[in-house]
Length: 208
Length: 208
DNA sequence: TATTTTTGATTGATCGATCAATCAACAAAA
DNA sequence: TTTTGTTGATTGATCGATCAATCAAAAATA
Image (tube, rainbow over all chains, first blue to last red; front, side, top):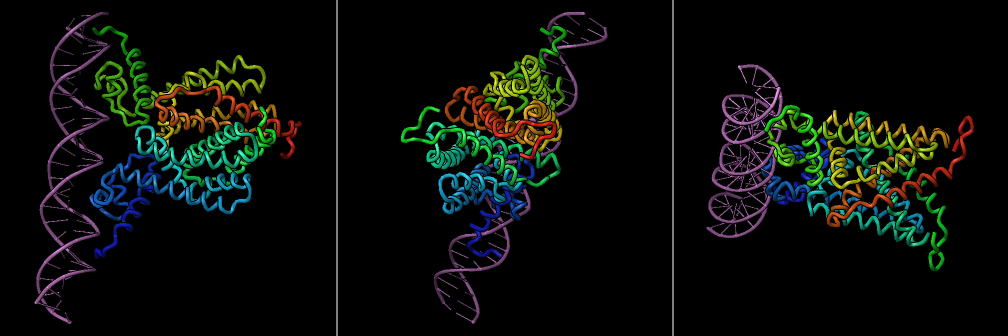
């Protein structure tokens, strides 16, 4: 049945199989064979298209990152004002696409991977920097630069922390579904109280 | 040179070697041989004393947990009032012992391990529950129960998030040292603004 | 249209390396 | 000499990677 033009279809299938396989196991201790089987192909084919296990992982990370960036981009476009852009980032971060159990598990696994793999770290670095500048830019219009940096760090930490906790809970309580709403509410509340506590930025932000 | 009474010495050496080996690599893809060599013994001896790789990991987790609990216990004993106990928990969580790069990396690695290993998950669950009840108990004396739960979740998420981010940063910037002070300040500020925003708890906490 | 050639798609089989685990043996106290 | 500590050697299993061999569609040719 080999029709030509299978390559993009296979690549996509293998990447999605990688996400679900990694997501099920919760770590990167998955074999190429497992991923391939889940994608309905042989392990050899996965190697053929990607070159090796590492590259399957990297392609999967890139896919996750691309989807996230795409969603953020869309949400930012519709957002009204800096505060709206902050909410957009938060909302997307806990959106159904990002907050699916297997996505969360894969994300966490790649975080760990970045500890020992330069390329993985570089990819995560791109995501982190983009998130950070989105937040700092928006916050910078609402408060002093120093405060903006600090609040952005807090938001990012809250997001990462809620992710890691969600990953554990969704397994502890027999695959309980994620609860994006309360996570969003918690972060939003953080943003509000932090913004409420800092002075408006004059042309020069005053100290505290 | 076999003197008797080596067992506890070897166990400790192997556990500490496991922490540093895991910490260096940043994940659990370490061999028993590497751990053993770092401890100055043979791989066979590590098996002899622990029974297997899994048990080395579990013993290492238990050790990490025990040290943390011990430190928290000590800090809680000296703390004055509920607000002081919250600060004690935060301070210990970012204390030098917990915030050493290899400890952070090992902690994160075990978090991922808990995704696929029941016993590891159980151990982390104990830690999480203890942390949570410490925080909720203290917060419950300062605000309504519902608020206490929410703020405790926020604190825990912030701690986890700052950990995971620290793990990445300390590797990105060529083993830059941790910065406990700013992490502590960020969480403390969160506690203050959240507590400032909620009403005092009457005998019955009012809604919001 | 019918036949041949080419090429992309795909896999089973297999190699080489790694590693956890086991065991038999040895050394040094007790 | 009995026990405790310790290790090198070995094994069995797993896995990533490679490769030769199919198979079928598409393209070229008759």
